[in-house]
Image (cartoon, rainbow, N blue to C red; front, side, top):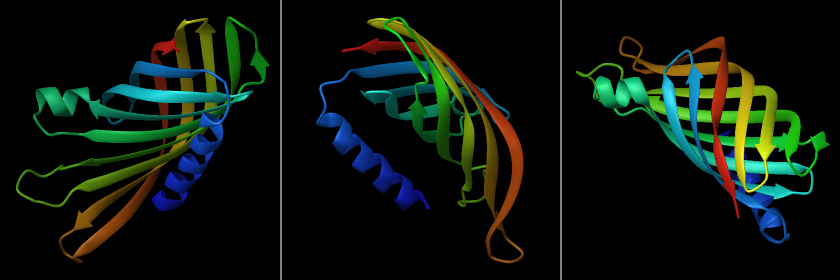
Length: 167
């Protein structure tokens, strides 16, 4: 499934780079039930459609518990309302991450979220953004008894707040 999303993102990015529309560099803070994340990313706009990718680290687990918790995110937004200073629209996001939950094991626990929500952007060159997604999270943890990864699913939410620079 990850390969499908990467192919979708790369094909969408190729279409976007051929256009004379804006790109932005993003920095933001995200909260979900797993951790606070510090994210950095890139977004490209094609008329009313915006496609972005970001990478981040979980603040609590990476800096305070000294267990690196990386995350990758792909997001697409269709801007229903679009003016020079204000944009809002429905959004779909996919998150992937991995964490070594047990220090005595070399097996990572993998997380993937698929979620729908909205994104709000305010500003011209320097922009503020806020997005909220309601997500289906699937956690793949290694079951030592069965010797394989076992999925467990739940519903979570994700709230992001940050700044962007358009160039």
